[in-house]
Image (cartoon, rainbow, N blue to C red; front, side, top):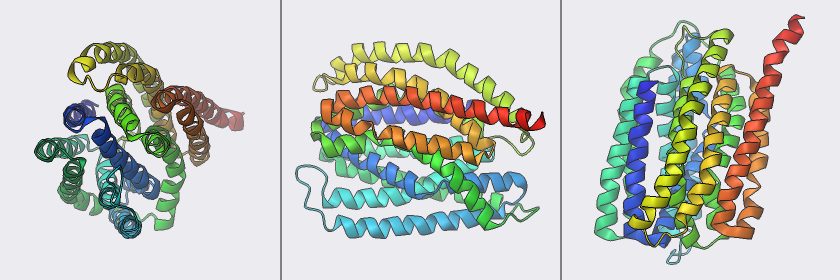
Length: 398
C-alpha cells in the first residue's frame, strides 16, 4: 500500500507542477488545447484497450504467466490499429490555428496508442502485486514527462512540445517495463485459454470503461461544446480536485492488486472493508484542505484563471465520493463478478451522458456540478450492486 501511495504522490505532484507551469505559460486557451488532447487520448486508450491487463493479471495469479505475453501482443495490435485510424482521420483536419487541428490530431493518435501499451504494462505489474516495480515505473513516467514538458512549454510557449514530452515519457515507461513482463511471462504452471482470459477482461472492461467515461469524458465533451478558454479553466481545477483522487486510486489499486496467496472471497471482502474505511478517514479532511488551499493559492499564482477556485469547490465533493465507487468497483473486479461489473459499467456510461445538458447550460460550471452529482449517483449504484452480489451466496446456501 505504501509503494502504491508513493507512486501516486509522485505522479500527482509532477502533474500538479506541470499543470501550474503550463497554465501560467500557455494561458487558458493553450492549456485548454493541451488538456483536450491529453484527455481525449486517454479516453480513446481506455475505450479500445479492453482492459486486457485484468485478464492477464488474473491468469498469472492462477498460474499462467504466458497469458501476460499473449495479452500484451493483443494490446500492441490494438494500439497499432488506433494509430493508423487516428492518423488517417488527423490528415483530414484543418490546420488548427483556433484549437485542435491536424498536428494535435496526430499527437492525440500517437498518445492514445502509447498509453494503451503503457497502461497494460504498468497495471499488469501492479495487478500481480509487484507494487515496488509499479512505483518505479510511475516515477519514471511522471518525472520524465514533467522535465521535458516544462522545457518544451518554456522554450516554445506552445502546447505541442508538452504533448510530445508526454509521448516520450509514455514510450520510455513501456520500454522500462519489458524485463518485468518477460519475467512474469516465464512463469507457467497451467494454461488458461486465451478466450477465457479475454472474456474475463471484457466483462471487467465494461465496468472500467463506465468509470473512465465518468472520469475522463468531461474535458472532451467540454471541448466540443464550450470555448477553449473554459476547457483551460476546468483543466486546472480538475487536477487540483484530483489531489483527493490520489487516495481513491491508491485504495482502488490496493483492492485489485493482491498476491496469489490472498485470493479467497473472505480475504477479498476483508481487504475491501479495511481499505474503504481507511480511505474515508483520510479523504474527507483532505478534500476540505484542497478546497481551502485552492481558494487561497490559485488566485495568487494564476490570476487569469479566476473561476478556478469555484470549480474546485464544486468538483471536490464528487471526487471524495468517487473514491467510494472506485474502491467498490475494484472489489467487484477482484471477485471476477462479471454480471456486477457489467451493471456498474452500463450504469456509469449512462450517467456520463448528464455531462451534455449540464455543459450546454452552464459550461465549465455545469461540468463541475454534473461531475459531483454523477459520482454520488454512481456510488449509490456500486453500493447496491455490491450488496446484491454479497447476498447471493447466502441465499443460494439457504
